[in-house]
Amino acid sequence: MGDPRLTIARRELATLRSEKTIVLALLIQLFIAAFSSFLVVGLVSLYDPGSVEGYETTVGVTGDAADDLLRVVDEQPSMAGTAYDSQAAARTAFRNGEVDAVLLADRRAGRVFVTATVPDGSVRTTVIVVQLRDALSTFERTERDDRASFLSSTPLDLPPRAGSTPYYGFSYTVLLPLLCFLPVFISGSMVVDSVTEEVDRGTLELLRVAPVSTVDIVDGKVWASAALAPAQAGLWLALLDFNGTTVRHPLALLAVVAALALLVVTLGATIALLSPDRRAAQFLYAVGVLVAFGGSTLLPYSPVNTVARLAVDSVGATYPLLVAGYVALGVAAYVLLRRAVPRIELGE
Image (cartoon, rainbow, N blue to C red; front, top):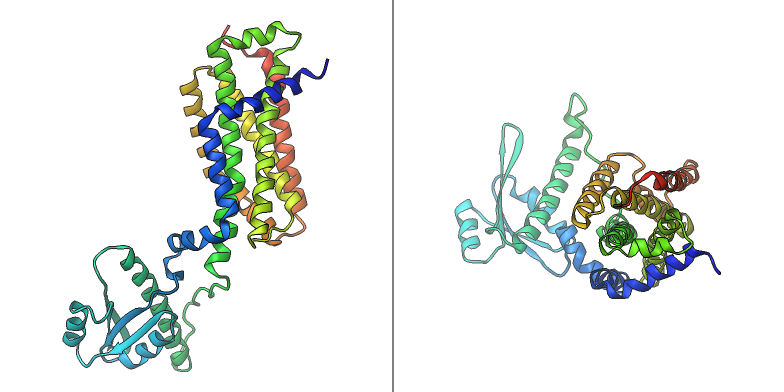
């Protein structure tokens, strides 16, 4: 007779086909990973509307400082400026649809004050506002550079310009963590459902009639759920690489995913054992994961930060220790659960 824990784990994985919600979630993740090179273009337009290409914004520029501002506007990608002699003429052109926005630039007391007029709220408005923001930011830098020699003291430095494209940032700071952590959260939810359903249907008692202990039953369920997350993540990484999103240190990244999966699944199993009611257990699990994951984002070495840095090879000497720390945390939580299982009443 084989290891009963492996038998239970295989039984758990076999029942996944009947869980339509989980199967649908897996298929959605597969679709995102498989077609990431196409989806990322559309998703980036929501993540950073200013990166949308193929849409040119026509801006009417008027005022005392119109010439300087117009040069900056014309230098911006997907923007074209038109000079107007008066504010009234620029606003008339705006109302007639000849321009998409109006910038009034006036010099007062040695400063340039810019007033922007844009259409009413819409997706188009969002794109225009972001493009105008970038143009005005560039204008501010230009004005500072031109007047640097006349300053008696150095003003506050501007933030450095971003060097990466929004596609690069979105792929590694949003898309990749999404595909790595969704399987982790789903695995935890799976084990909550599995344990509570066994208690609710009474099938847990049938399992315990066999020559297996309660610890063996929990082991099998935890193993099946925890193993699913790194397996999915490995497939998603392969599909991302196939679509042109190269992931560095994939083994270290999968180790982090496996450790977090073990930690989250252990949390889910513990909640299910302590609160066998399915709805209550799922609620407690969801709240616990949200609080823990949300709180971890405040840390300098949060899971999202770690995954992104490993993926882009922006790691230092401390990252092997950090990965080892994640693994140790997951294993420690699992060991504590195994020791606590015999002391937990399983709805008896």
